[in-house]
Image (cartoon, rainbow, N blue to C red; front, top):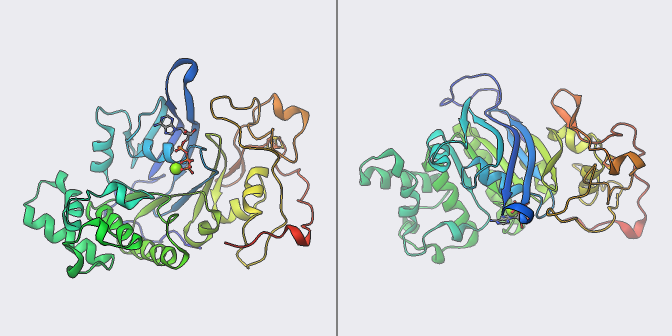
Length: 344
Ligand SMILES: Nc1ncnc2c1ncn2[C@@H]1O[C@H](COP(=O)(O)OP(=O)(O)OP(=O)(O)O)[C@@H](O)[C@H]1O
Ligand code: SF4
Ligand SMILES: [Mg+2]
C-alpha cells in the first residue's frame, strides 16, 4: 500500500486542507423527465500527496465525477475547489483545470492521441498553454517520454505503431509534460494485462514520488486499490457510501456495499474474506431506489432502509459511511468451499 509523502509537493502552495475539495457535486445528463443524475451530491476531500481511489460498479458515476473535476462535463450544482480556488464555474472549466494543474489519463490511450501525429507531438501539445517556442516544447516532450521509458528511437512513431502498454506510457508522459499537481487516472490500467499493469503502477508511484503528485485513481477493480492507493471512496448509484483511508475503508467493514465489493477479491495477506452476496442487479440511475439506494440489494436491509436515506456519518477521523446500522451489522457468514472466488 502506498503512503502519502511526508514532504509536500515542491511546486505546491503550502496551503492547509485538501488539495481537491468536492461538496455536494451533481452531474446530470439530459433534461426534464429524461434527466439522469450520474453523480448525485458527492462530497469528498483529496489530501495533498494522496492517491484517492474511487471504487464502484460500472455505471455508478466514476467517469462522470472524473470529467467534472477536469472541467470536461458541467456540474449541475455543488462546489469544487482545487488548492483553495473554485473550479467548474468558469466560462472554460477545462482550460482552468489545466492551468491550475489538473490532468486526466483515460483507459483507452489510443482515443486521446491523434493517430496522424508522431507521439512526441501529442505530448508537446499538452504544453501549448505555456506558449513556449516549439523546439522547447519538443525537448520537454522528449524528456517526459524518456521519464516513462519511451526512448528517442520511438518518439517519431504513430500511436498505432506502439503496444497498449507503450501507448499508456505516452498518455502518462503527456500528463507529466503539462507539469500537473493532480492527475485523474480513469481506469488507466484496466485494459492492460497483469504484468504491464504492474509496470505502469510502479511507474505511476515513481512519478508521484519524484514530482510530489496527487492522484485520483478511478477503478472498478478493487484488487489494484491495495497496490497503489492511500485513500478510498466507494460510489453506489452516484452517491458516496464510504470514504476514508484505504486501511479504514478496506478493513473497517463499515458499509455492506463496500463489504460486498471486497468479498470477491483476495485480502492483503492473500486470504479471501467471507463472501457477502448482493441480491439482484444494479438498479437504474434513471429511477434510483428510495431511502438507502442499496436497500434493494443489501443483505442486512431493515424496514427503515427503504424510506429513510442515510447520511455519510463520521466513524473516526476522516472515515465516514452512509448506513443507518453502521457498526451494528452482523459479520458476514462463513464462506463455503465451493463459493471461493478465483483471485484475479
Ligand atoms: N454523455 C452522457 N450522456 C448521457 N448519459 C451518460 C453520459 N455519460 C455517462 N452517462 C450515464 O451516466 C451514468 C454513469 O456513467 P459513468 O460513465 O460516469 O459511469 P462509470 O462508473 O464510469 O462506469 P464504468 O465503470 O462502466 O466506466 C451511466 O448511467 C451512463 O449511461
Ligand atoms: S442503510 Fe440499510 S440498506 Fe442501506 S446499507 Fe445500511 S443496512 Fe443496508
Ligand atoms: Mg468509467
